[in-house]
Length: 107
Image 1: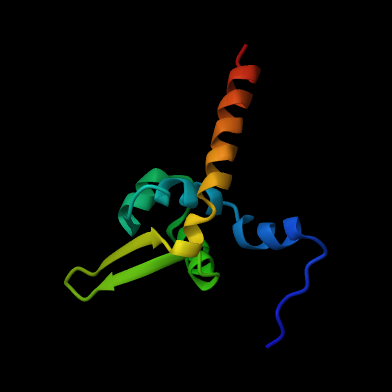
Image 2 (image 1 turned 135 degrees about the horizontal axis):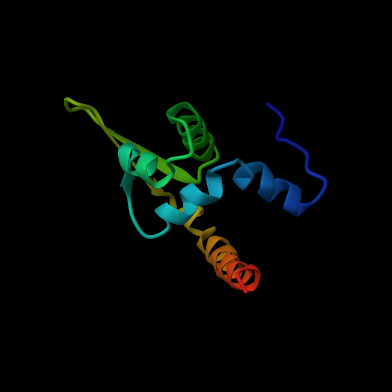
């Protein structure tokens, strides 16, 4: 399989984190491990199918780790991989900018 070709580094980054809910997922996982049900509560606008798709893509790209516990009912936890943790400064910077933007538009 040939690796994808990108026009620039931003293109490469957005191909990994550019999904509809991916940055929000990364924001919630930056400091802790969460179960699927907890992520669903934190992203009520995401359908379970869309959330699952976004999580699988992040897992496929090596950004998050999915741990499945073989119990009844099944328990699945998500956390950032070491590589995924390298995105924490990016997520934090976007969060900080978002706070500034919210403050600016609410005046």
